[in-house]
Length: 299
Ligand SMILES: [Zn+2]
Image (cartoon, rainbow, N blue to C red):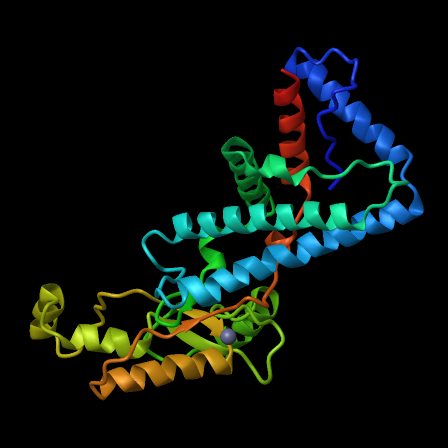
């Protein structure tokens, strides 16, 4: 937001990293204490632009890159893809914020322009990307949760679950799932405020489990079934997650198509509007990159 440019007129001794950081701090402190109301408003507006850009980028990547490529939160490399998405969105949001401030400031501004050209060097870009990722983790973000949810696996918001059997959920479990749903949202799309009640969604879905257990490939299941007419052995451990009607319908549509032998792409649920704490954009990456640029160019 208020990055200080390397200043050729500076007579300060910035030969050591510590001195350099002290100079950067002094300059920022001076700027912040002399900030006019108009500058504060403009800085807030620039920050707001960055704050909108960050989750928007994550949402666009989800919808137009990961969903078409069928990359979901249950993908083997979900955390790597998610980290990439956070890093790219952090860099774009930082650039947009810097540019917004450059446009908004006037000649009276005590904060110098954000020289966004420093964001073009690979080192600085890497620093902004790394800091964005670190801030995301500090805000308790999970990389896989910025990817679309696969309706056949626990979704991006599936933090808490309850043990399940083949049977429908009991009244007590359904009540518990309402509490979990209101707190964490639908496990697939993250919606907290839904029409009606949260559905107790079996994960993996019952239809999938039944198909697996009916196949003769589970040797242990076959042996147990031979000795006991009705064995309780089950090769798959199921869990209950709260799910909204809309996501449940997506799951049902997919499973019904599969049961009719239709070849249909896996249905993924995107959730770009379900914002959480880790979607907050901070100017920390931009400030660090600016300080780094200042100190390295003084050298
Ligand atoms: Zn949902």
